[in-house]
Image 1 (cartoon, rainbow, N blue to C red):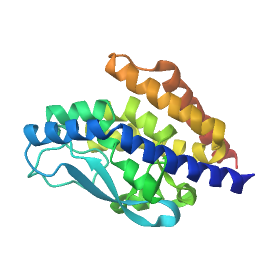
Image 2: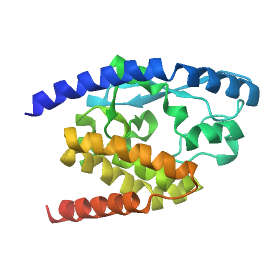
Image 3: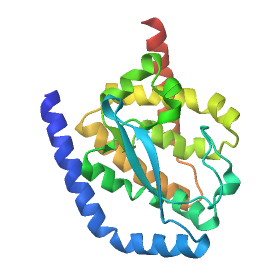
Image 4: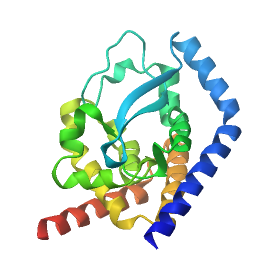
Length: 225
């Protein structure tokens, strides 16, 4: 059953990524024009990330931060670096579109744990959290949704590491327990719902509450074990 699911998951990922690239091609042109007009420079941002089996790959995103500012090796960077059109890209998750290329290449999956930054491996893949590296990193998933709903609103690296990161890491492990066709489809539907809520200026409270409950239940289970 597990191998059958993984095979179907890869077929689904590749098919959706290819279809997504074709359908979203006009959005790529809009994003490229908006970035160039807002802050001339590279359209894409490429970051070294760690995926399945701790393999390092180059993850693609549309650039949303100003040129000339060094990338900081922290969990939450300076929000002032984000230019206005870049904020729009982030709020609508359009900055993640280039990761369809990573999915097509087999670096990532549509749903899975968050990819880990190379310089943050000690924290995000240390101890029991190393289990998250057993599966493909995902474009979306429980931890990505938690970050989108709540994490993006927390300013400052110290606050992020205290208020957001512990739950985010717990949700990476939650995915390992719940992963399956039904759960993956649920995460895709929830992602669409979260984006619509953000555009409408609302927070998806039911989804947020469910994510918190899952993280807490998993944390308690880990403590008992």
